[in-house]
Amino acid sequence: MSWTQRHEVRVVLLVLAAGAPALVVALTLLTLDEHSPKVRWTLASLSLAAWLGGAAALYARVTRSLHLVSALLAALREEDFSLRGRVPRDDGGDDALTGVMREINGLADTLREQRLGAFEADALLRTVMTEIDVAVLAFDAQGTVRLANRSAERLLSGRGGLLGRAAGALGLAACLEGQVPRTLMTVFPGGAEPWELRRSQFRQRGLPHTLVVLTDLRRALREEERLAWQRLVRVLGHEINNSLAPIRSIAEHLREQLARPPGERASDLEDDLTGGLEVIARRSASLTRFLAAYARLARLPPPTFATVEVAAWAGRVAALERRVRVIVEPGPDAALQADGDQLDQLLINLVRNAADAVLQAGAGEVRVRWRVDAGQLALVVVDDGHGLAETANLFVPFFTTKPDGSGIGLVLARQIAEAHGGALALTPRSDGRRGCEACVTIGASAVRPLSQSA
Image (cartoon, rainbow, N blue to C red; front, top):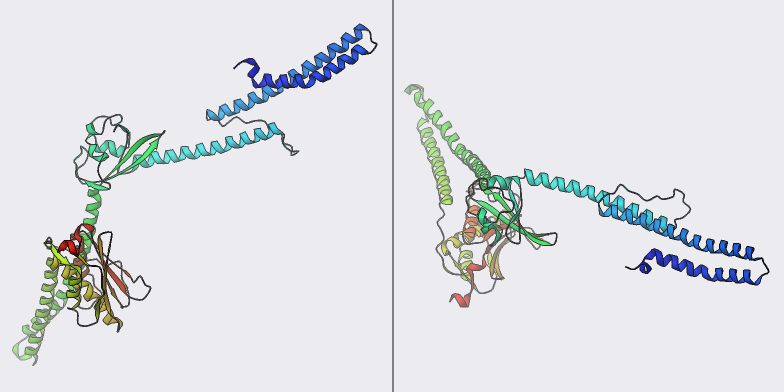
C-alpha cells in the first residue's frame, strides 16, 4: 500500500484541502493590504503554521484513536478480555469514538462470559468423558483415533497408545461401518462381548469425524436377569405358598385327629378325612397346573413358518368365542409367513381377555380389525370393557387380576409376536371411549399380498 493510500494520510490531505481556500484568501488579503513586509511574512508564517499544526493535530487524534481501537480488537482476537477502552462517566451523550469504545467493552464482557461458559462446559464434558462407564472414541475421515476416554483405553488395553492409531489396527474397523445401533459380538483385551454399538457424525474445524460409543451390555443384562429372577421367585413363592398353606393346615388337623385314641375321635372324622383329602388333591392339582403353565411359557418352540391368510385367521379365532359378540371387520387382503398354530394361540388369548373385560363391564362387544401400512401388518382387538386398571404388571409372568387367571396369556402372546419379528402393545382405546386396544404388529418381512402368497 502506497503512502497516499493510507487512511491517516487521506484524512490529513482532506483537512489540508479543506483549509487551503481560507489560507489562500488570508494570504491574498495580506498582499493587497498596505503592510510592511515584516508584518506580511509574520502573519503568513502564523497562518501557515496554524494550517499545518491543525492538520498535524487532527492526524495525531485520528491515528491515536484508530491505534487504540486496533489494540483493543487485537486483544479480543488473542482472547485477552482484560483491556478496556476509556469511556467518560458523564451522561451527556456519547460521541462517535465513545460509542465505539462502549461497544468494544460490551463485546469484551460478552466474549469473556462466553469463554468462561465454554471453559466450564469443556471441563464438565471432560469430566463426564473421563468418568462415564462407556467407551467413547472419535475417528477422523481416515479412520485414525483422535479422541479416546479412559473407558476406551481400559477396553483396548494392551494395544499401546490409542491416539493416532488406525481403527483396523485396534480391531475397530467394524465399528465404522454397518447399521447402527446394533449389538457387536467382539472380544477386546479389556472386556468380552456383547457390546452395543452407536455411531454418529460431527465436524471439528470443518473436518468430518465419526463418534463411536461402545456400551458393555453384560452389566445391564445381569441386572435385568437378577430382577427377572427376583420377580419370578416372588411370584412362584406366592403361588406355591397359596397352595401349600391350606395343605399343611389340613394335614396337621387330620394328623391331630388321628393321633387321638379311637374313643376320643370325632364322630365325623371320616367326613373330615374325605373333605381334607379332597382339598389337598384340589390344591395339589392347581399347583401342578401352575407349574405346567410355567414350563409351557419357558419352552415356547420356534415358529414353523407357512402361509397364513389374515382374514381366515381372524375369522377362525373369532368363531371360537361364544360368550360375547365378536365382530371381524373387513380388512385388506394379506397373508403372513408365520406359524399358524402359534398365531391362533396369540389371538385366542387376546380375544378371550377382551371378552372377559366385556363380561365384567356387563355389556358390549369385541371387534377385530387390521391394516397394512408400509408392508407391516397391525391387527387390533378392541373391547368395550372398563379399560386398563393396571398397566405396570401387564407383561409380568403369572401376574393376573382375574380370580381364575394364570397370568401367562399376555406374556405368551408377546413372546409369539416377538418370535415373528413383531410386537404386542395394550393401550386405551384411540377413539376416546372406554375399553382397551390390543395391537399386534408383524414385521414387513413376514407380510405378503394375498395374490403373491397364492
